[in-house]
Length: 221
Image (cartoon, rainbow, N blue to C red):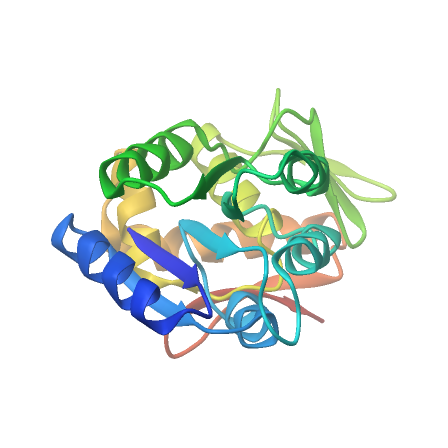
C-alpha cells in the first residue's frame, strides 16, 4: 500500500513515516500543498494523510482541488487542537476522516487501515462519466453518445479504477494487486487493457488506456 504523507513539520513527518513503514506501508513525503498536488496528479496512492495548516497551499484547498479533478483517493486530515470548524470544512470538502493533533500513533494506524478498507473507487454513484462515455456501476454498461456495449465484471471494475483516477498513472504493482483481488493474473494486465481499449473504441470514446514506463494512464486521443 502506497501512502502520501503531507506534513510541513519535518520531525513529525519523519516520525509518522517511520511508524507507517514499520507497519508495512510505502510512504512518499511532501512538505507543502503545492508539492503534494504535483505528486497526486502524477502518481497513484492508496491513501493520503494531510495536515491542514501548510505553506503554499493548505490542506483544505489541496483537498478541494483534487476532488474537482475527480481524484477520489481517500484522505485523512490532521487537524490542530481539534478545531470543529476545520473538521466540518474538511468533511464537506471530501475528506474521508480526520484526526486531531496530538494523536497516538496506534490511533493513526487504525484510522488509516479503516479508511483504506472502506474505500471504494466507485463511491456511491450509479454511473461514472468521463469524456464522451458513461459507465454504469450496477451493470457495467459502457455507453457512448450513439452506442453502448456491456463489459464483464472484471473489465468494469478495472475501467472504474481508471475513470475515478483519470489524471494519475496507475503503477504496475497497484494493477497487479488489484488484478489479484479480481482473481486475475498479473500477466493479464495487458490483455485486459487491450480488450478495454477495443471496447472504448467501439463506443467512440475520446480516450484510451495508455501503457507508460511505470504503469497505465487514461490518455486523450
